[in-house]
Image 1 (cartoon, rainbow, N blue to C red):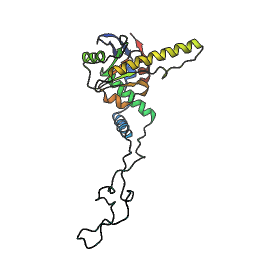
Image 2: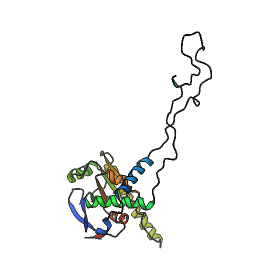
Image 3: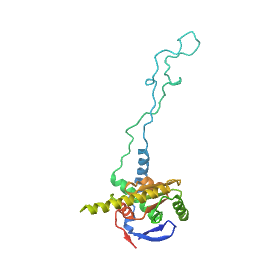
Image 4: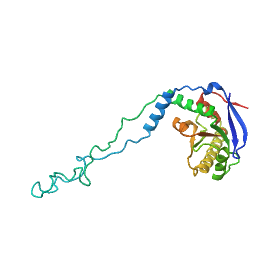
Amino acid sequence: MADIKKYNLAGEQVGSVALDDALLQRVANPQMVKDYLVGYRANQRQWSANTKSRAEVSHSGQKPHPQKGTGRARQGYLGAPQYKGGGRVFGPKPKFDQNVKMNKKEKRAVIRSLLAQKIQDQHVHILSVDGLDKPKTKSVADFLKKMDLGKRVLFVGGDLFASMEYEIESVEALNRLEEAYKASVTQRDIVVKSLRNIPKISFGLLPNLNGYEVALNQDIIVLDGNIDQLVTILGGEVVYE
């Protein structure tokens, strides 16, 4: 059993969550992880750099100067590369066929393996933000200092409707669900506003988590109440102590 420790904003441990060892098995080999990270970074490129050749620049067809009699080298077109405003030789062109494809199962396997490695190395923590009722950067900064975490830290929250299967039985149930969603969004906004001015600290949602973010950040902080979605990514159930 592996434990994920739970802390409050004061940096004190207030509990832990036990995970079955079967959830922490690495289902992706190193080559698959490398292919995922290289492909992900390649897909982030826009491939939109574009330059004009001498055939595409807007210039008249008039010669710069007479062919003979001036003592200068022969020139035939002001849009030639040697002139200012002329075309560029072998310049970059847009590329639209550079997307690297990866199967969904492979993506999930890589994310699961990277998360499992972080948990085994005790770089995943749970944070309770009950006392944070308004944005306050100092509280989060003090927490990070007391925890002595890495330079890059990723805070992750959950999405109320990401993995929820529910049936709306009445108007009251719908109202309760709406209130819970608003409270979740409000808490998430407070955390985001509290940490957005801290360098190299980022925030994301568990359903949108990708392997590059997991590999890039040294530590991952999961907001309290969203551990179930983390365990769902690992493919299992959570047992609270």
